[in-house]
Structures are given as C-alpha cells and as structure tokens.
View 1 (tube, rainbow, N blue to C red):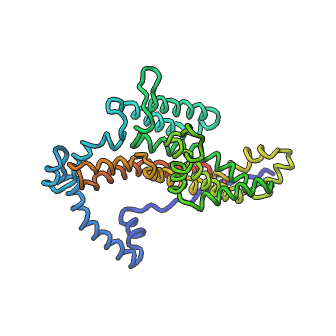
View 2: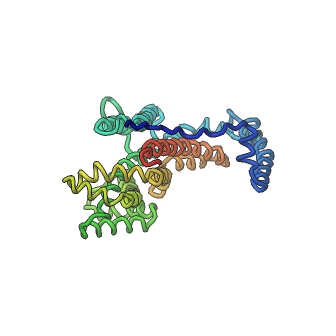
View 3: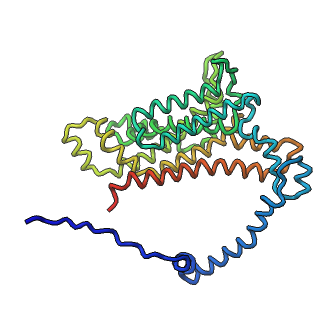
Length: 362
C-alpha cells in the first residue's frame, strides 16, 4: 500500500491594508496609541526645524562668514575640508591612490560576501585586494612615490586598521576558543590567561603599551612602525572577544555529534573543520558581527598614539581658526560614513543568519 506524502503549506497571513496595519502596530492598546501620538507630536515640532537647518537655510558654498550669517548648516565647510577629512595628510596630488585603495578593499569585501567564492578562491581575492591596496598606499614601485605611514589618515587608515584587524583576529580568536575548550590543561590555561588578561583592560591601555612601552624593550636602533604597533594591538584585543563569542558557539554543539565523529574515525582537526566549527560559527553570527562593528568603531582610539583616523581628521579640520564651530556638520559627515559601513555589515549578518539557520528551523 503506497503512502502519500502530504505537504502542508504554511498558513497565509491575512492581508492588511494601511488602516489595519496601523491598528495592529500603532494603536493596538491605549498606551501604544498615546505613545504613537506623542511621537507624532515630537516629529511635528522637530522635523520642520531640522529640514530648515539641513537644507533651507544651509550654505552650500562660500566662506565661514557666509555660513554664520545664514544660520543653517554650513556644508561649505565640508566642501573645503572633505579631502583632509577623508585622506588626512596624504599628499594632495596623490589622493587618487588612497581612493583606489579604498575601492579595492570595499570591492574585496563585496565579492567576499558571495558564498560561492568561499574557500580557496577567497584566499586569492583577499591577497589580491589587500596587496593592491598596500601598493597604492605605500608606493615606492612602478613609478609611485613612497608615502610613509606617518602621512596616512582618514578613511583609508580606518579601513586598513579595521579590515586587517578583523581578518587577522578572527582565526586567532577561533584558535583561542579551541584552546580554551581543549582537554590539554596547559593549552587551556594559557588560553584562559590570555583571554581574561586582554578582556580585563581597555583597548586604549593596549595601544599605550604598544606605543610607549614596547619600544623600551627593543634593542637599540630597532624600531617598529607606529601603525604596525597599533595594528597588532587591535588584533590582539579583538581576538580575545572573538574567542569568547566562538567559545559560546562551541559549547552549544551537542556532545553526541562529537562522539559520533570520533566513532567514524575523524581526527580532531577533521571534527572541528567539518562538523563543529561550521555549526558553532553559524550559531554566533549576531554576537560575532557585533564584535566586528565594535572593533571598527574602536579604531578611533588610535588618536591617543598620534594616528589620525577618520574621526580624528574631522576633529583636526575643526582646529582651523576660520572654520571653528562647525562641529555638527563634521560629525554628521563622519557619522554617516560609520553608519553606512556598520549598517551594511549588520544587514549582511542578518542575511547570513537567515541562510545558514534554515536547517535549524522547525
């Protein structure tokens, strides 16, 4: 007797018009209705003034005196200072080089988001993208003038610190997480000491140590580039937080799967690569991306060791006596750039969480 497989379709959600949606989401209860009316009132009072300041009374060109006379936003400040904010003290006639470097990094990240290139092709993509970006920033070959890292600044510096930091801290964090969950006492103890020590101090103290204390322990005549020291500090700091996030995912994997893998004769690294880590990393995508976003924003702390990242160049642009006082425009511009990168990363993490979590849904 043949059995028929009945596929049950998911129940269709009732269609709601605009009025039904408002009743369900904005006016479902008396306190929701009161909160909705309060928000609408605040928007009614604030939005016209904001639009007037941003657009109507804004000054788009001219000098600082014209901006102060108009009373609105001074977008002329950004027209005058946008190059310095984006590129810092990089030579003015060479700004096309950090522009290409940034496009290379962004393009590399966009291509990496495609799951079809995950694996060996991704290694070549990152090697090519980072290599081209380094060539554009450093120069010294192919007829390009050499530009020392002391002249780097703005958005290219922020992207370099964050992308290289995240790319290097992720595998280090995974190894630390595996070490902390290892059955080897010495390896587990070393991992615990490292993670707790790094997580117990703020990033600014690690940057100070890398900038001030580390040169004291180097032999005479030996020096390490300041940018490299800051990069190493960010990598070590981010790796400790990545390790704790990944450890949470490792603990969520049922022990029965590991025992079954052992019964099949799989070695330790085969079990981790084929069974444990793919599931653990899929489980911790939201907190992992949260750590990445925090690291991206924490790069602004490199100002304490004399590096001018994106936020620092905006602050430095405001020190010009002719343009003092237009901090709102500078911070809005920088904040919009941070928002675009963080929002894109957040949306991609939502996509990955949805795709990789399909097998766990019931």
